[in-house]
Length: 68
Image 1: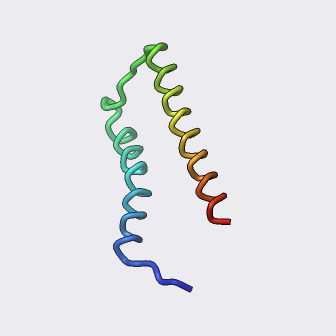
Image 2: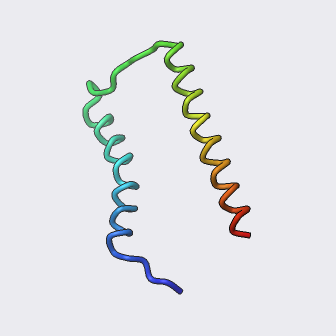
């Protein structure tokens, strides 16, 4: 069994806490919640995220294949 380093745990805790802090900010200060609606930008933003996820999935699949 390997031991994890203390800085690694703190990094993970920070990454878990940041979205919760953002949610708390939007609940505590609703004026910061900006309403923005632009359908073409939404489409291209989601399409870009999908391409990034496809690339990450392909990379993980290739690395897993090499590992076996």
